[in-house]
Length: 285
Length: 285
Figure 1 (tube, helix red, strand yellow):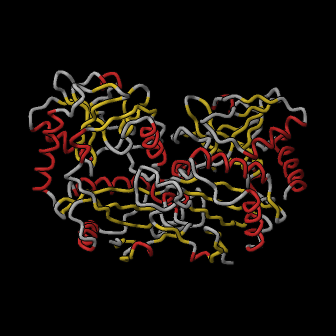
Figure 2 (tube, each protein chain N blue to C red):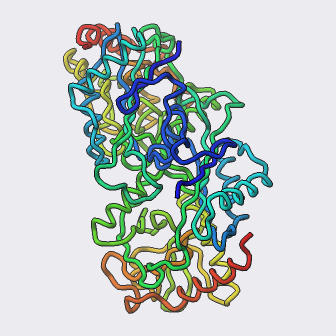
Figure 3 (cartoon, rainbow over the protein chains, first blue to last red):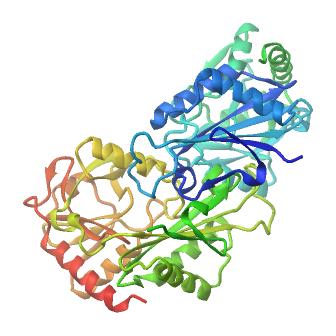
């Protein structure tokens, strides 16, 4: 089925959804994005994504051209127009169209706002059952990973390099500590049953699913340590997993070829996933 | 005058030059670029730019859809169609259009190639006479700056921050050493008359104008040291300057408010600029 794309207030068939080659998103990666999961045709953790979008926009000094109400209404309309039951909504906001210049265009230049959907069976994710293998790669991304920008060339290169090494994804390492997966937060469970996840900073994105899992873990009395961890700690862990908007919780069963625990998905990881799905189905809007 | 844009083999009026929102250049900054200066309607240092373009394309695993001859012919045609006497040709190559995925699209996905011109009086550059003021800012860019990608958000942010500090541009600093300006190579001349420019590595772009100036300096018996230099060394220098395809050679007269030399453009800098322009007018094709 051909998708209906939202572009600057218009609803367009996929082949007509085009932007100027002078869009700063195209010429200079001067753009941010957000991905919201759709479950049962409803928006998962929407408030978290909308809040982070506003923060990213503020960091770049770009104003979102929709009110909070219109943003939510547009998310709902794109789900309905594309009949998405399970999948995701991708949203991208750029600084707009201007002749190429490192200096920002004048105040009042209209930003570009595009949204599209991807259908994906998020509940029946094979990786959630088998777990994924990750390769360790250096984190060569820019220094402000707390802003969700479209500067995704390196994560994409790292994903390809991980595959070339026989893994499914990469965990990125900087100054001896794991930062993130290529498009997900990285977590481990120590032999003492402590959930360790890196503390927030400019080095990583404040994952919305990460925050939800921390809430869930706290509710269940799991001890949490928010601090950087090393690849060696990760390899010595009992469980490892990633979280992201559309992957929810997916176990990591090996790191650079070394088995995590007994090499099978961890029990706590499984519980986190089940509880995440159960609670989000109830709270999706 | 409305420009004529080159896009995937077509010549289009500016308002019609559009790419799909699914272009990986737009969604993931999965794209490289090159800027070639036009002087007297001819291409300056063209071979250097064409060679670097091929290298960037190779590093990303994207094939340029034009032969070397066609690439040159297209550069000449865009100059002629847009009647450019002085200015620049901007070229961008992306991995093409595909549904959004960190995994590269299948082999054979056509890349996107776009070219446009900007008219600019490159000979009568006010900054070449007065010099520019630079502010020192941390270099937060990704780790493969030797590849000329469109991940230009940080250089753009740094340019704006430099202006907010009353400067014209920024020199970026990493691990205590200057890497580059936001869109140019950085150089100093020591009190001993030595031209110091950072050695090539993944930390900086192999500037085409930088290479030409090194040639010119060598021809004129100027001692050259290719090595990293600190902000303190730069501030203590007799002269400082930047080089880029469209700026040629432009003096830096202050760094973070500290005067370089007597605060006026340096004599060697002036000679480099004059000699660069003189020789390039002769060798432009």
